[in-house]
Image (cartoon, rainbow over all chains, first blue to last red; front, side, top):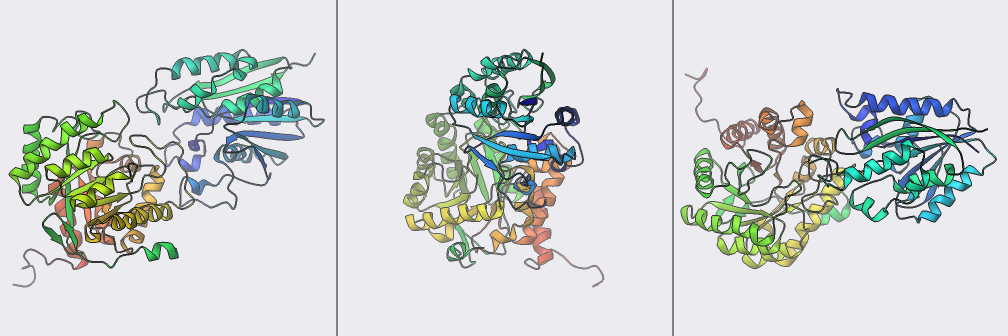
Length: 228
Length: 300
């Protein structure tokens, strides 16, 4: 069963070690920390981190974020953990979570059905699982954005925000993955896994953060099941 | 450096560009001359041809040995098609060639059609600023007997910004790519003494990657290929100093240039020439590559 699900983005600048003297985005970091804290407080048997990657696979639970991929002078981890999972593991580390964790990469080109099915398997687990789903909205939200401004980005992200805020998991499942690729959205496949895990559950949603301060849309949200 | 990279080294020697021959100890300044309305530094300043020719006159007087003429900014949008890029650059190159027969003229482009038009108009060097994106561009350099700059941009396509780019070892990646491009250019017939390598700070790199490339620039220098750096007023300088406006980044630019010069970089692509010349001359004199201009202090 799912005890709770959290949604976080995975900009490398979430790692305080990568932003230099200026903390840059303390509000975003605080929102993510709150999500992790509330996930942990549901006393799960394990936290399942779901993040986009080239291929769908499970990574070993003791893998950590390799900061040196982004900043060569930083310590080097021994693994090649994909950055989205690495940032998820980093958030758990920062919360001093030492319970069981599952690092689940989901291929960016994975079919909707496979993503949804993967989510269902988590929901039907006999373990109490908390999901931490890593993904961003469009990276084309402004002229200075990594992908420059695309006028289709804002309405796309608005639709995602609406789906998150109203726990409309069917809408997350039906996102146009082709358009999402053009808009440099990293969250689609993980959100579809989330949908598979959550859509049969009544949930209450808290949206803690939804903004694009550097032209990349970040969503931070918590979905708490309401079991009658 | 791995064995494959070692095989692709070159003996340090002269750099030939156009009619000029530069010794390994001669620091060379390449002045940026943008034929664009919207480049990141001093946008539109030399969009007008008269202003651009005036800029060439000024940078030559200030000590630039190369002018690097480009018709498309590196940042995304608005699009500039091939014909427009040729119109922005080739006639201007012809005008510069006519006014300055011995000046080394470089064309900053990633497109072979533009490279061809520029060489026909008198360019001496093809600055392939998006790292071999168009494989035919090096062929144009070979065909015209001009020089060629081998650039590392990671996996970026032209006019895109890096988005969460990662490297296991960014300098190893730079070496791998630039040495491959150099070997290919030489195989195509570009005179090896006219080939340079450029790690391309900021291109396909975050600030930490560009700082690492700068810190380890000597690993490029020891390949023997002349190294060009284009660091002038760039974002990695701005982020290092917390300065968002490009025009505020000059002191940081000069500091990074001095370090690169000390480590043996030979060509510096810059916006502000006079200051760059003084920095490079100071660095070269400290290295012992140049004598001081005039020495009386304590000696009279």
